[in-house]
Image 1 (cartoon, rainbow, N blue to C red):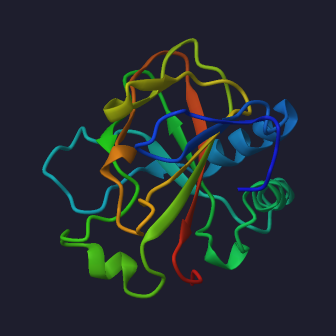
Image 2: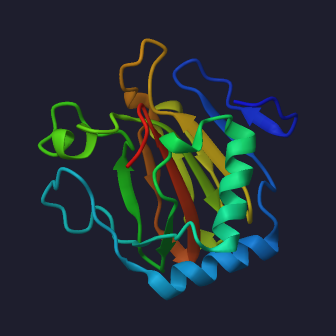
Image 3: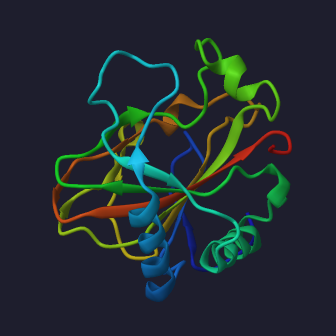
Length: 199
Protein backbone atom coordinates (compact mmCIF):
# COMPACT_ATOMS: atom_id res chain seq x y z
CA UNK A 1 0.00 0.00 0.00
CA UNK A 2 1.32 3.42 -1.00
CA UNK A 3 1.75 5.85 1.90
CA UNK A 4 -1.28 8.18 2.11
CA UNK A 5 -2.05 10.08 5.29
CA UNK A 6 -5.78 9.75 4.58
CA UNK A 7 -5.67 5.94 4.59
CA UNK A 8 -6.67 4.53 7.99
CA UNK A 9 -5.82 0.99 9.03
CA UNK A 10 -8.26 -0.87 11.25
CA UNK A 11 -6.22 -1.68 14.37
CA UNK A 12 -6.77 -5.42 14.47
CA UNK A 13 -4.05 -8.07 14.11
CA UNK A 14 -6.40 -10.59 12.50
CA UNK A 15 -6.29 -8.98 9.05
CA UNK A 16 -5.01 -6.06 6.98
CA UNK A 17 -8.04 -3.80 6.47
CA UNK A 18 -8.01 -0.13 5.48
CA UNK A 19 -10.41 2.68 4.67
CA UNK A 20 -9.95 5.93 2.77
CA UNK A 21 -12.76 8.48 2.86
CA UNK A 22 -13.43 10.70 -0.19
CA UNK A 23 -11.31 8.49 -2.43
CA UNK A 24 -13.61 9.28 -5.37
CA UNK A 25 -15.38 12.56 -6.05
CA UNK A 26 -19.15 12.74 -6.36
CA UNK A 27 -19.13 13.40 -10.13
CA UNK A 28 -17.05 10.31 -10.87
CA UNK A 29 -19.30 8.25 -8.58
CA UNK A 30 -22.38 9.41 -10.51
CA UNK A 31 -20.79 8.44 -13.84
CA UNK A 32 -20.01 4.95 -12.52
CA UNK A 33 -23.56 4.60 -11.15
CA UNK A 34 -24.89 5.39 -14.62
CA UNK A 35 -22.82 2.59 -16.13
CA UNK A 36 -24.03 0.12 -13.50
CA UNK A 37 -27.68 1.03 -14.10
CA UNK A 38 -27.24 0.57 -17.84
CA UNK A 39 -25.51 -2.83 -17.72
CA UNK A 40 -26.65 -4.66 -14.58
CA UNK A 41 -27.55 -8.35 -14.39
CA UNK A 42 -28.33 -10.72 -11.48
CA UNK A 43 -25.26 -11.43 -9.33
CA UNK A 44 -23.88 -14.95 -9.00
CA UNK A 45 -21.53 -16.80 -6.63
CA UNK A 46 -18.84 -19.45 -6.97
CA UNK A 47 -19.46 -22.78 -5.22
CA UNK A 48 -23.26 -22.55 -5.19
CA UNK A 49 -24.58 -23.40 -1.71
CA UNK A 50 -28.27 -23.93 -2.45
CA UNK A 51 -29.33 -20.61 -0.88
CA UNK A 52 -31.00 -18.64 -3.68
CA UNK A 53 -31.12 -15.59 -1.41
CA UNK A 54 -27.40 -15.67 -0.51
CA UNK A 55 -26.53 -12.90 -2.99
CA UNK A 56 -29.47 -10.91 -4.29
CA UNK A 57 -27.74 -7.84 -5.76
CA UNK A 58 -27.16 -7.01 -9.41
CA UNK A 59 -23.71 -6.84 -11.04
CA UNK A 60 -22.02 -5.53 -14.15
CA UNK A 61 -18.55 -5.56 -15.65
CA UNK A 62 -17.27 -2.03 -16.26
CA UNK A 63 -15.52 -1.58 -19.60
CA UNK A 64 -11.95 -0.30 -19.48
CA UNK A 65 -12.83 1.73 -22.60
CA UNK A 66 -14.97 4.09 -20.52
CA UNK A 67 -13.13 7.26 -19.50
CA UNK A 68 -14.51 7.18 -15.93
CA UNK A 69 -13.33 3.57 -15.53
CA UNK A 70 -9.85 4.48 -16.77
CA UNK A 71 -9.72 7.31 -14.24
CA UNK A 72 -10.81 4.96 -11.47
CA UNK A 73 -8.16 2.40 -12.46
CA UNK A 74 -5.47 5.11 -12.43
CA UNK A 75 -6.48 6.19 -8.93
CA UNK A 76 -6.51 2.59 -7.67
CA UNK A 77 -3.05 1.90 -9.07
CA UNK A 78 -1.64 5.08 -7.54
CA UNK A 79 -3.00 4.08 -4.13
CA UNK A 80 -2.22 0.36 -4.17
CA UNK A 81 1.03 0.22 -6.11
CA UNK A 82 -0.17 -3.10 -7.57
CA UNK A 83 0.72 -3.80 -11.20
CA UNK A 84 -2.55 -3.42 -13.19
CA UNK A 85 -1.78 -6.68 -15.01
CA UNK A 86 -2.78 -8.52 -11.83
CA UNK A 87 -6.22 -6.91 -11.64
CA UNK A 88 -9.53 -8.39 -12.70
CA UNK A 89 -11.95 -6.18 -14.61
CA UNK A 90 -13.72 -3.65 -12.40
CA UNK A 91 -17.20 -4.74 -11.37
CA UNK A 92 -20.14 -2.63 -10.24
CA UNK A 93 -22.93 -3.80 -7.94
CA UNK A 94 -26.38 -2.39 -7.20
CA UNK A 95 -28.44 -3.28 -4.13
CA UNK A 96 -32.14 -2.38 -4.01
CA UNK A 97 -34.25 -2.45 -0.84
CA UNK A 98 -34.05 -5.88 0.79
CA UNK A 99 -31.05 -7.03 -1.24
CA UNK A 100 -27.82 -8.24 0.38
CA UNK A 101 -24.75 -10.43 0.04
CA UNK A 102 -24.65 -12.71 3.07
CA UNK A 103 -21.40 -13.31 4.97
CA UNK A 104 -18.74 -14.48 2.52
CA UNK A 105 -15.07 -14.23 1.65
CA UNK A 106 -13.72 -12.92 -1.66
CA UNK A 107 -11.07 -15.62 -2.06
CA UNK A 108 -11.99 -18.92 -3.68
CA UNK A 109 -12.23 -21.78 -1.19
CA UNK A 110 -9.18 -24.02 -1.86
CA UNK A 111 -11.39 -27.10 -1.34
CA UNK A 112 -14.32 -25.68 -3.30
CA UNK A 113 -15.80 -27.25 -6.42
CA UNK A 114 -15.02 -24.16 -8.50
CA UNK A 115 -11.47 -23.53 -7.25
CA UNK A 116 -9.68 -24.96 -10.30
CA UNK A 117 -12.08 -23.22 -12.70
CA UNK A 118 -11.38 -19.78 -11.24
CA UNK A 119 -7.77 -20.08 -10.04
CA UNK A 120 -5.94 -22.38 -12.49
CA UNK A 121 -4.50 -19.51 -14.58
CA UNK A 122 -4.23 -16.33 -12.48
CA UNK A 123 -4.15 -17.91 -9.03
CA UNK A 124 -5.98 -16.86 -5.89
CA UNK A 125 -7.40 -13.43 -5.18
CA UNK A 126 -5.03 -11.33 -3.10
CA UNK A 127 -6.45 -7.84 -2.45
CA UNK A 128 -9.99 -6.49 -2.61
CA UNK A 129 -10.66 -2.79 -3.25
CA UNK A 130 -14.28 -1.68 -2.83
CA UNK A 131 -15.69 1.83 -3.17
CA UNK A 132 -19.12 3.00 -2.06
CA UNK A 133 -20.56 5.21 -4.79
CA UNK A 134 -23.35 6.72 -2.70
CA UNK A 135 -24.65 7.14 0.82
CA UNK A 136 -27.61 4.86 1.59
CA UNK A 137 -30.68 6.17 3.38
CA UNK A 138 -30.82 3.14 5.69
CA UNK A 139 -28.97 -0.17 5.87
CA UNK A 140 -26.41 -1.41 3.37
CA UNK A 141 -23.44 -1.49 5.74
CA UNK A 142 -20.51 -3.89 5.32
CA UNK A 143 -19.92 -5.97 8.44
CA UNK A 144 -16.71 -7.86 9.21
CA UNK A 145 -18.14 -10.27 11.77
CA UNK A 146 -14.96 -11.84 13.17
CA UNK A 147 -13.54 -8.46 14.19
CA UNK A 148 -16.91 -6.83 15.05
CA UNK A 149 -16.33 -3.92 12.65
CA UNK A 150 -19.06 -2.35 10.51
CA UNK A 151 -18.63 0.27 7.79
CA UNK A 152 -21.45 2.55 6.67
CA UNK A 153 -21.73 3.57 3.00
CA UNK A 154 -20.40 7.06 2.27
CA UNK A 155 -20.06 8.54 -1.21
CA UNK A 156 -16.57 7.86 -2.51
CA UNK A 157 -15.30 5.91 0.53
CA UNK A 158 -12.90 3.07 -0.22
CA UNK A 159 -12.38 -0.11 1.78
CA UNK A 160 -9.55 -2.48 0.95
CA UNK A 161 -8.24 -5.64 2.53
CA UNK A 162 -5.72 -8.39 2.03
CA UNK A 163 -7.49 -11.72 1.56
CA UNK A 164 -4.38 -13.59 2.74
CA UNK A 165 -2.44 -14.10 5.93
CA UNK A 166 1.26 -13.14 6.08
CA UNK A 167 2.22 -16.70 5.08
CA UNK A 168 0.13 -16.44 1.90
CA UNK A 169 -2.69 -18.72 3.02
CA UNK A 170 -6.29 -17.49 2.77
CA UNK A 171 -7.56 -15.48 5.74
CA UNK A 172 -11.05 -16.46 7.00
CA UNK A 173 -11.10 -13.30 9.14
CA UNK A 174 -11.93 -11.40 5.94
CA UNK A 175 -15.47 -12.82 6.18
CA UNK A 176 -17.82 -9.90 5.47
CA UNK A 177 -21.54 -9.31 4.96
CA UNK A 178 -23.05 -6.78 2.55
CA UNK A 179 -26.06 -6.11 4.78
CA UNK A 180 -29.60 -5.53 3.54
CA UNK A 181 -30.55 -2.12 2.22
CA UNK A 182 -33.50 -0.89 4.24
CA UNK A 183 -34.23 2.34 2.36
CA UNK A 184 -32.84 3.77 -0.86
CA UNK A 185 -30.31 2.16 -3.19
CA UNK A 186 -26.67 1.12 -2.73
CA UNK A 187 -24.00 1.21 -5.42
CA UNK A 188 -20.44 -0.05 -5.09
CA UNK A 189 -17.54 -0.89 -7.34
CA UNK A 190 -15.21 -3.80 -6.64
CA UNK A 191 -11.71 -4.48 -7.91
CA UNK A 192 -9.93 -7.76 -7.17
CA UNK A 193 -6.26 -8.58 -7.70
CA UNK A 194 -4.68 -12.00 -8.30
CA UNK A 195 -1.41 -13.79 -7.59
CA UNK A 196 -0.50 -13.85 -11.29
CA UNK A 197 -1.36 -11.67 -14.29
CA UNK A 198 -5.05 -11.72 -15.15
CA UNK A 199 -6.34 -12.80 -18.53
